[in-house]
Length: 190
Image (cartoon, rainbow, N blue to C red):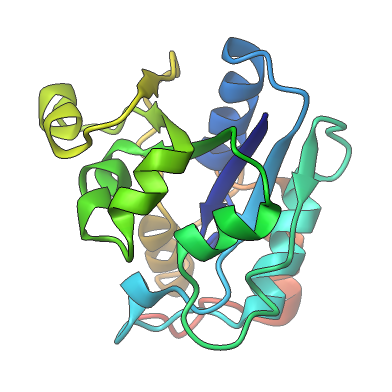
């Protein structure tokens, strides 16, 4: 069984890592694969850091955790990246897709969502302000709720903090923080 934790990872943060760890433990997974989106269609019209920066930050964030892996297949794909294409590219039937409740609630709007839901189990990370019943009503598939502590951290919030000169120390791994500083990322974010 393959577990995929996909996302923009702009930047990868403590909530991503805790979600991967909880999924690994709760679902007894061998590996959680972090999969940065190449050109995420959901972010059309939004500023997204270059794929090579986001991939490198994910590599740094997961370094040293042997049950975490990083897959770059979406980063190297041309055009929009769709989760169904990625799941099918693995060629496996049993895939666990780890999603925040906010993303899971919107899954029916995704490209070929019915096909996707036929091929995956959805492991859902609770998010503040997102009702479980609303998510389960939106997704007609097998779902597992991860027993994870509430961490109200988002990439948007972190980018805004960096842009306004505030610290994100301890909200991202030190190696990611160093990379952001060295590359001047998010300094001019809106």
